Length: 178
Image 1 (tube, rainbow, N blue to C red):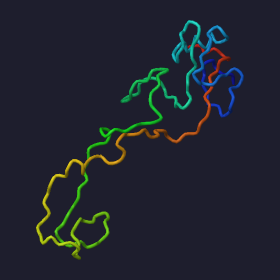
Image 2 (image 1 turned 135 degrees about the horizontal axis):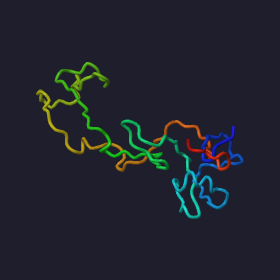
Image 3 (image 1 turned 90 degrees about the vertical axis):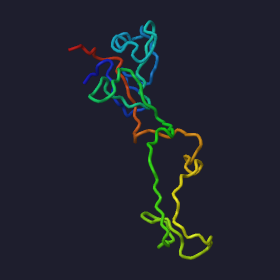
């Protein structure tokens, strides 16, 4: 089966077959055997449109269909979005609470764990002489400040992948509109 000029395929080889080029953003001369491909993709992927144009750059990219699906953001042909890393800011984390339950009764276990209530120990290791119920109080700002690295850092944002080459046909059948 002969390929259409401008057709893109995945290719498991480490070279581009005859009549194909890697989709690596290469800048091509319009007048050097690529006039037909230029007539199809123009400067969608870059170039000045007078003497050169760029091939699509699909290195580290996942192609998606152009257009707008119901409830989705419109994507134009040639538009690149997304990032392979993301840096979360404190404003990216939804508000939430960490409830602590406490009791004036003696603790029943010395080990913290799920469903265990914070309580005083049954053996006295310090006795202030005070036996009143705990008082609810707001925690001081330093006690409830975000923990961890002071500066958010980027982390990978990549789905599981298997790397292959994308190639574009530069010599083949002209795709007639139909």
